[in-house]
Image 1: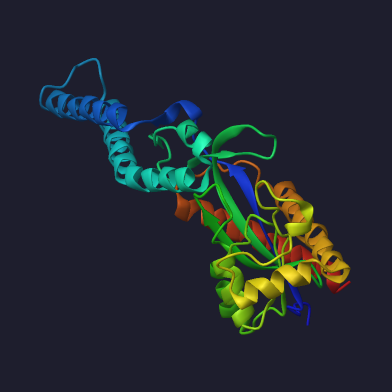
Image 2 (image 1 turned 90 degrees about the vertical axis):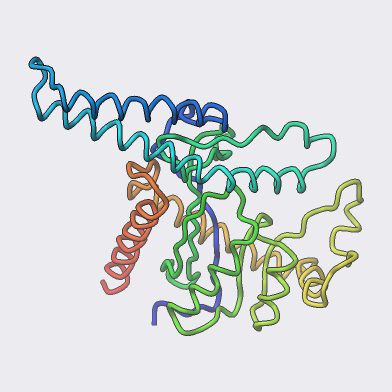
Length: 290
């Protein structure tokens, strides 16, 4: 009975990845690095045939293993480069014409190829992962966990809601999320499923405050209803509950150690996020049964 799904709040938190900023390289540097490390692997293989008396077999094996692992990471970085390129293209499309020239060439880390440079809460840019959490408002129980390498929350609401539905067998009655999640496509689908969306409406560029909640070209009927709803004081009061839920859970997760990942790769990072969420829910259960 602790999970009611009357109101579910979703938020994303950027968590530092186990990769240095200097490990991110463009395609030219990656290809050159791959040539160097392949030559090193071949050289170490030849040294195995003619071993140096001053180097033990264990040390020789360790050198070969380190070179092979580095070669695999560089090869994986080149494999993930098209994904980084696609992300840069989406940035250019979403930005104003004057800002598109500021989008830099795609770079991938040779330490953790799946990590991406993201804007952190302090305003700086560092390698990170975006941890998405969905929390039931009633008792603060986490009902959904996801990790992405996208620096934006746009498009993350639908996959999370589907995960909540799969885990609980029910759909939330109300979905609370910030403006980063509020895409017209996601709002349309959520409202079609009978879920009431509470998210702030962005003010259009070069428009007055009076036009914030007015319908726009391309709006579906569901999006129009959402805009009208968010113009009411009642909806604004409901949305305020998102911060008290999602931000509180984010702070709890950081207290549990999810402030800097020490593992690499999306699969391992997701495992850590699940374990931290599980620890949070166990503590919530312990507090509720007292």
